[in-house]
Length: 307
Image 1: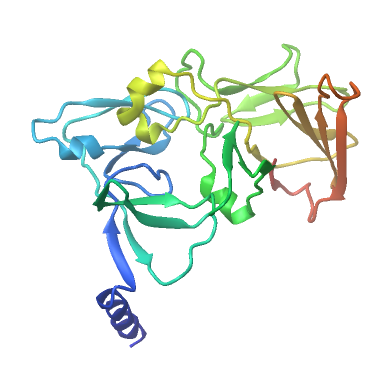
Image 2: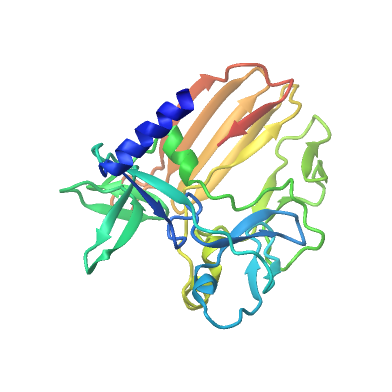
């Protein structure tokens, strides 16, 4: 009965145009919303990802094979002519509520009112919006995103659990900073062996850009001709399986004139230090901000950490 009541309510809202249904044809909002696409499993590392097939779906002539690079290891995977093209996502648009920042909205293309666009609402009336190094600024101030909005917008660029069968030149990976390092890797999991070490680091090697594999077919020519912009809005997530002793775990990120360091000890004490290099017009000393706290819950039994 509850399902029937919901169906009647949905039909009423659609009939009176309080809700409107759409099928998304293109992937301009990927990976939040997909248009016509194909699912790919990388033959090198096993990552599953989607690739836009909007242009292929519109082709009247016979299809030809296309290639799409894996976002995790860089392997070019072939999408054969017989690969199924999946239909774009279906969305229901609420035409009553007032849109808020970060909402997905639909609107008419000003030059052709027959075309509907779907985008994420970021700038509001009267605001000046800038995008710099992956950060969004409203009227000159950095716009902070909440936890739910951030999770919607992160793009996975590398997963160490997906180990490549063969390494490609320039492909992203983690590696010890020194040859004598006590960091050892097996099946994508890093283990630190030893206890009396002052500074032993893993460093990330490879390109970090705002490219998305989904749109590679449509934008491959533009990407080849233009250098992708630098992105400083990065998240590092790790699963800490075992942590004990007197030492500490540090996560470090350096981008342009900023250095960020998070230090975590086995007793769950945490310190975040942000250091910005002073400009020539300033006093010449780095500006430092330190925040200290304590993580909730034990670390020894395993914990997922995000930085």
